[in-house]
Amino acid sequence: MPADTLPHQRPAQPRLHLFDGLRGVLAVYVMLGHLAPMLPLAPAWARTINFLFGHGFAAVNLFFALSGLVIVQSLARFEGRIGAFWLARARRLLPVYYLVLALAIAGLALPAPFAVMPWLHQGDIAHQIWESGLPTPLGVHILVHILLAQGALLRHSLSDAQFSLLGPSWSLSTEWQFYALIALLSLRFRPNTDGLAPLVWIFLCLALAGRAYAALAPLDWQFHRAFLPNEAGYFALGIAAARFWRGVRAANLFLVALLITIALGASHGTDGPMMLEKSLPPLIWALVVNTQRAPDRRCFQPIATLLGHPAVQWLGAISYPLYLLNEPVSRTLALIIGTATDQNKLWFSLLWLPLSLALSIGLAALLHYQVERRFMRTRRPAVGMAASAP
Image 1: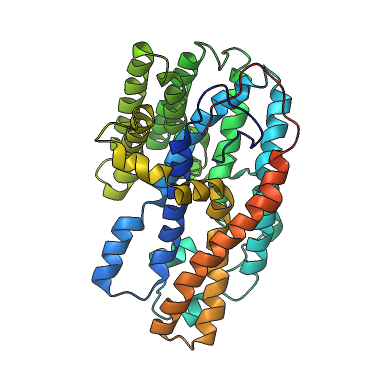
Image 2 (image 1 turned 90 degrees about the vertical axis):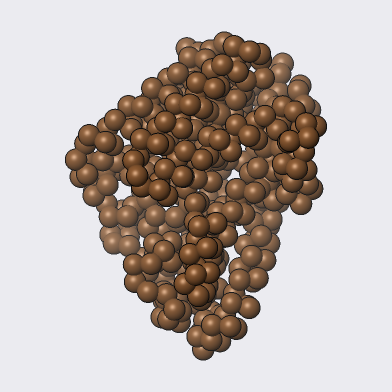
């Protein structure tokens, strides 16, 4: 997710800056995917918009690949001190997360905005994105979110636990499982040596095992989406990319990881949206990786120009809080504006959409500069080679 390199650090290798831009594009895409289904659009327009922006899970899969790339390089700085690594990740991610979680809980305590948005109907995508209110038992749901334990729960052990308070938090649960496992594995396979290859294979095998379990286990015994094996292939792609810069053999491993991850996506059968969100991210990841390797090639220049634009780079810097808080912000604004405009579709659209975008980006910037960056300045271990993480 967020970048690891501090403003005052001097990377030993050139920063892979296009991945910063990718992070910004993904965060904005997820935000637009949360906003679009709430608008009072004609059915044809609604279908088109949903086709374009309704693949937020695919964007999150790319976030997982980014984490695979970032974390193996971050681990190298800690030289086997996994306690220090875990503490650094906690300082890096949890302060913003807990602040946004508190805001989300406060927003859910307010009346649901659906009553002032009569164009939305029970069972549509909007109701899947926004919860109607606080879940029960509330204390258990809060505890699960505080511990980021969504990925450890079976599907029916706690209803809708992975989305019940703060939807995007499910991916943080998956991230923490990844941090725990790869830190332990790094004690055996050094992430700054050829140990990267075994790590790629371990996570690919974990992904294959997770897919087999999901296909064979009864529904009641399946885990929520946040369970690490369900997403392990994308982390493997990120680790493979970290090794890709080292030559032909590494390129071969990257290609194998790419093909296996695409095949895992295709194994979901004829469910078009599911296949798309599982199989498309590896191809996009390969495209961005190759663009970063050769940004001056004519075929890659438009992508390099977009991802390298200063505005997109800045969005990448604030992408973590933006990813987390856009949903509770837009939900609360919908209640206020829907009530103020007396459910008028035109005025609601003209006010709610730009205000949701502006307030989400503004608050994300505030959290980034006042909270996130302050914890990024905490003391880091001094080692010989700083990570060139995105």
